[in-house]
Length: 400
View 1 (cartoon, rainbow, N blue to C red):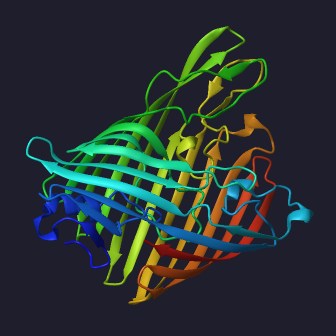
View 2: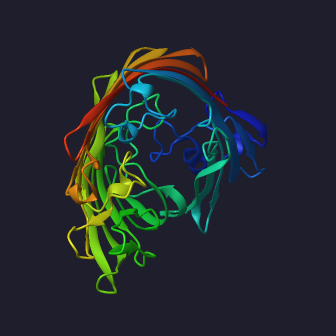
């Protein structure tokens, strides 16, 4: 069950518990840009504990034309509107998304299977620095996960984009959480969580309202049906309470946010995989790729009132991956994102966006891949003005 690429540094392979191996080499919550298959293994003498170490080096170069985004990640939200003549083209180099991870997995008669996972990359710096950044850090015991992990509201199924940002419409969020997930028979799975609301981001009106410390966790849940080993359909939902200060009335107020999503992936024949997600909600902008941290969970209602509202957000994203030979595949993805009720944030506030990419990836030798990708993005403001950007990029990835 241990892949041939793994290097066992110490311990007896024949004694390792099957459940321990399954945790290390079969995690359904991983997406394309999460490292997998630890290269180096330490096993204890009884085979009940294993420590895996791995990661990858990821380097890219990209060239923008007919519209440029300032940064190595293609974020449609950051397309300047109106178009900036000084930024019609650009060249970016990046290696900050190279990652290292540690994972310990074990089995005991009392607790069953358990694991601890820590993942980092080097994208935490500003101004060209490459500081270490914590991406995930969690412990799973049986069906319970605690720590910094992918939100329960987010489906990890995603097409393999070379751009680490991916479609702006995708739901993508990691939170401090407590999650319970369990399989019901062979095909069904459910999960429910309580998650940190610290990601909430507001657009306030000076003198009328302001954000305050959040008081209630976000509560997401999902039910999933799987078939054929690789395919699944997931229905997710979330409710959140967003706290703010109404300075006009001098009171603390609350707005309710909620969201529903239908997502998954499906095999089409032997060589094509289809990915899909569609959602709508209010006050969930922090969970959307391009809107995170940009102030659209709550916006002012306008006028002289100090009240705030949760604008609506809808998104449609999907893609295809075609493995046309053993060493190469091609993929394409798209995303359509729209914000409703954001006009009170200003005429130049975000309105909607579209995203499209297509790529070709070739495996040079085991663990080393080289890919090229074209990306197109379009951003519209509330006043209808819009701008576009185009990017060609190449990336190399070596897993260890």
